Amino acid sequence: MEPQSDSVSAGMPDTHRTSREIYDEFLASSDAAIRATGAEGWKLGDDTPWSLEDDQVLYPGPCEGADASTGPWHMEQHVFGPPPQDPEGAREQMRAYFESRGMTITAEFQPEPGDPPQATWTVTAETDNGSRTKYWSNSLQQSLLFTSECSSDPSMYNEVSQTAP
Image (cartoon, rainbow, N blue to C red; front, side, top):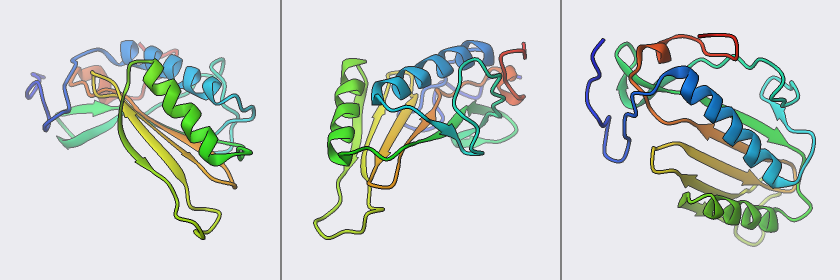
């Protein structure tokens, strides 16, 4: 399978790296961001505790603007943490963390006074290779959405895990 191009759409590079290369880096950077929150008790969407020791199976999906059958594809994972004591301060802490990692802040949002408690403080950051992390915090919870870089390597078309090639 030949790569379609070096870019799916503007700003979305295709790295052509294998799923294992991306997977290992993806989980390590996800874990580092979770630890940067300073909070314990992070969970996956199915309520399973977050742990690098567990074999997490990920199913890459098509990158924005890509054909599902020809790629490129990316990995994505959403994790949920306990509510921070100070949602705005937690967002600022993550913003500083992202910047310290050389990431570019691409979006921020803050609730208006009087908004309901589920209104979130958000910050989104991106790396040069197109991987993205979005952080949300409010008085009910905090969460992180990790999206890996895009790759048209054929290995990205299958499930990926610690035991998968």
